[in-house]
Length: 143
Length: 117
Ligand SMILES: Nc1ncnc2c1ncn2[C@@H]1O[C@H](COP(=O)(O)OP(=O)(O)OP(=O)(O)O)[C@@H](O)[C@H]1O
Ligand SMILES: [Mg+2]
Image (cartoon, rainbow over all chains, first blue to last red; front, side, top):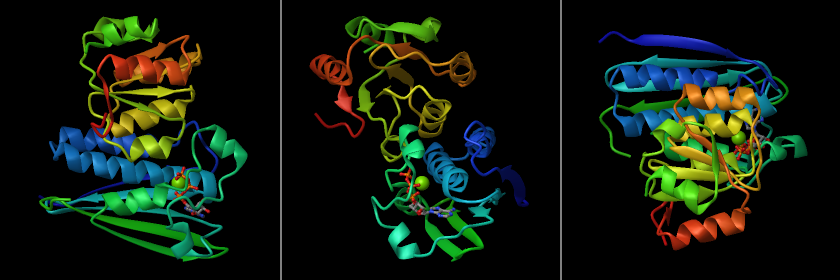
């Protein structure tokens, strides 16, 4: 199977459309008859990532590359970046506003949950400039 | 138990999906934190929440939650109901509080999303 690539724009502070990329890809993967447990992990990572861009980041991009042996998900945005990635990865750490909390976000569980669900995750961030989260999913792996 | 039974226990009414009230539910999760729901296993599970936002429905779609019950008579906007219907997720509303809803469902034999009792 050759690789299939899709990309979607994510708009900062657009809570109405947030999550659409993840739901669209979830449906696509279902049509492709990918293992449901794997689809679920990819959907959760994508959605948490999209919400982070909407809440904390600037405008961004959701990109997925589907191969027969691996799926790569990349969520990037144009700032303001993460000053301390180790801290951001801690369970419960959050800089979410009261407005975000009223909507049910800001538990500080998004990044830890993405890390748990991806086979591998890499975060790159330039404070004041941009953030990129790359996640790898192995299609035959068990996790 | 069937969703219709759960609705009876909680004296809940349907906004949509009443025609699918025979779907089986055996777990429940109660939270207003979306990341909590996303961190749990949600198949055959119902989500009890006080949040009637579009993101509550999207969280259910992503995590595989079968149905959502809004506590304390909270009512979702029509666009929220439309999105849930599009994804085949019944939305219900109960006059019960979160505490009483959980108590009644626990009593009736449901487990937590992780299967614990
Ligand atoms: N794309 C991003 N740009 C800038 N900061 C980010 C980005 N993603 C995450 N962060 C920072 O990392 C923190 C932790 O993120 P995480 O997703 O774990 O929790 P949260 O988004 O605050 O809450 P939750 O995900 O539980 O709703 C955020 O509060 C924010 O400070
Ligand atoms: Mg987050």
